[in-house]
Image 1: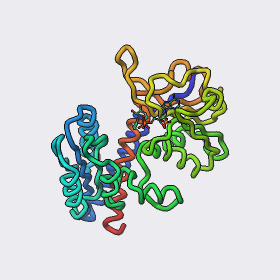
Image 2: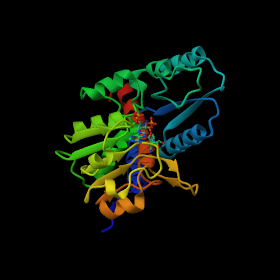
Image 3: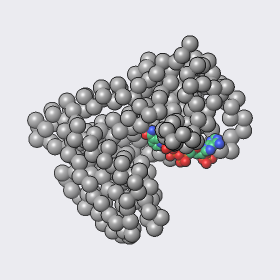
Length: 284
Ligand code: NDP
């Protein structure tokens, strides 16, 4: 039986509607939620992502500001701009579009974002808070994955969850959030032995590898929920995930599509975090 598709499109639309309502309420109280995005250089993919974020904000009534810096910008220039955004009380969320040019120390820049404006949830303070279960901004992609599981009615507690990928922005936080939901979590990476066998034991499989159709049908446990984070181009030039969707849908009970899956929820969660930042700044 074919898997049920967890639509990022439908869920993101619901989330955006809710966010728009919250923005309206905040505006009625004189609070104007505002997200500042810093873009350094002119990486084409980054420009597309930034434009998407600006459009999402506009759709929900959130003000967005773009701070653009030249490809050759220095670390000091980036930090100076960040300092301005940090001090600007009319800016509630600050996001630095990654990747940054090679001359910039990415970790130092992330650490310079004030935790209370860190709507990407990437600063060491927010990562630490998430790890020990304190109130914080959750990183958008992993938070979106959890929302998708809940939306589909997939129980997480007590389940065997396997996350393939251990990056700081997806794999590691996804594992932590699944743990927080009381799953039993295994994290796999490029040095993992017998990956196929481990994946095939997963009730919940999160693929965040960055390799087109890497997870094949035989790596899926019958009845599993499969969350495909990957965004890749297949040989025919089409967008595809890290999971072989056609083969996996034959075995899984639930699966997220690419495109139309986790990517849209990532964007929606950023809007949620921005509204949360505005509310917190106003002491609400
Ligand atoms: P990274 O390249 O930072 O991490 C990839 C991870 O996959 C690493 O931990 C790596 O292991 C692991 N890996 C690589 N090869 C193998 C292998 N053969 N077997 C097992 N594990 C392997 O990528 P990201 O986490 O940033 O992104 C992952 C994917 O998700 C990409 O396609 C990216 O485009 C997409 N993405 C999608 C988002 C969305 O909104 N949908 C948001 C962010 C990313 P090791 O650590 O050992 O090197």
